[in-house]
Length: 158
Image 1: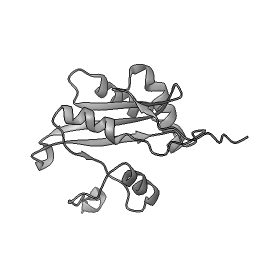
Image 2: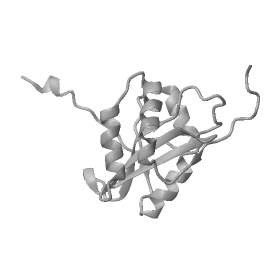
Image 3: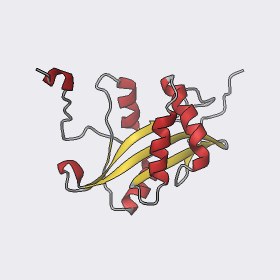
Image 4: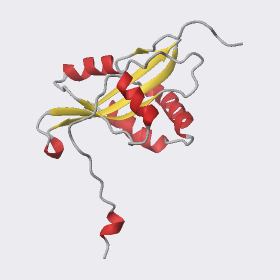
């Protein structure tokens, strides 16, 4: 029987806690089809470190972790003179019983980032990921006025 109650938006807490690590790995595995314990072990360790410059948020919906966000803060690296945050991971379970209208991650992330003097949150999306681009558009992201370049290092061998 399908649930016809209106979808609710998740609420975001100030930070992912150590107790959220299993849920984070499980949500990401449901999205990607493979588990990345080592990746999240490192990312969450950075997020929990007192000296780490990171942002972590957990979303709750009906008392359960329903998504998470991990970002790193940069203060002038890579030739950029202003403070920016780079979104490393933003995941929600692929099959919520009643999917939220929107994830709503931008507002709590903005609150946390503006509090430490960061005015821009950046991320990258594959050019052919139309559904993901549309998702980020709903969250308030717009195309950036810069070009990201990749170099295939195998092709540099002579």
